[in-house]
Image 1 (cartoon, rainbow, N blue to C red):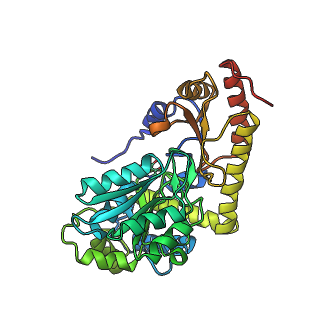
Image 2 (cartoon, rainbow, N blue to C red):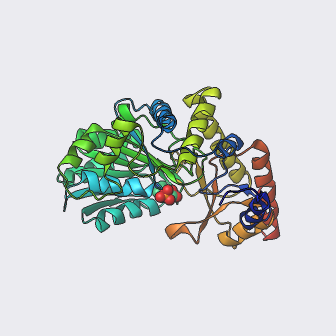
Image 3 (cartoon, protein in one colour):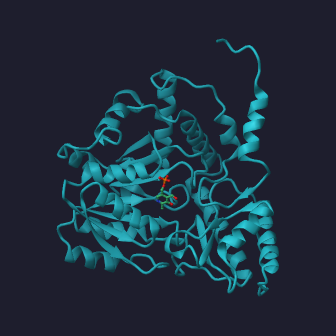
Length: 387
Ligand SMILES: Cc1ncc(COP(=O)(O)O)c(C=O)c1O
């Protein structure tokens, strides 16, 4: 059937389902996208085997390599959410029945542990009290006691507690002991410093719906040569996340074995160009650091308390203790009624915290509205702000 009539009104119908009214997003992801990204993603599709697509893929990989300082690694873009690479790291680079030292500082560290178990490998857990990071000497000690682990997993930014692990130092310790380093940077990449070559990270991955401010559906990773070497000796790598096959398609045709999320790759390309126009990587990371600082100051000005240990605050999400007598989910609902969506507490601290995400497209006006609304909501719930 040829399309002669216009059905643009159905777009409005669907829009009303997802966006019955405007909301300012301070979520944990998906987050608000740059308007330029949304505009570019309307582009008509091309075949992922076409020369034009290959040029887009190549250019996006090259730009991301620069952003991550990953000249020596292979940068992969695949159709998946971030968890795909979590699974791929274990299936491709840890031998069957092999051991992995999993560092756990919250819910997403626990997910890595589960990934190890469900893929038939053995996790050795180094767990910290919630709100605290893993310290290099603790990792060193754990590796001394478990010399037979093949790899170490690190959650760079723990989205459930708002803690940023000292990745550079942790990786140094793991590499000195000859271990592979896998990094869950899902809520860090794009906002926290990552220097893949210098820090010798073996597999560091993220998802599009976080700090790059894109819609979900694309996962990206920088992968070291050592991971590919290990993969060659592991026969059951599965089909969808076989890193050797994914690399082969990249090298032979600047594409992926299965169909990639082309609009998201267009969006990533646009955001990487915007980063350049804004002054480059350092300027962009500074923007994130300043935004996070402003959010924390606003929270403290209300007399509220941060959950994370000082010195390890996340640049992408701020986790806050519920004020006495007030429930986090009630704050969330009351904020939403007033047009601001924050995030509820997550994991084991779900009942004692609420969260403000600060990833993606957020304006100064959004932040002003956030705090005016939060002040109003807390007052309505009987909490008296200190200032
Ligand atoms: C630290 C961390 N790891 C992993 C994930 C899972 O990512 P995805 O939903 O993209 O698979 C999330 C999602 O919030 C996260 O914050």
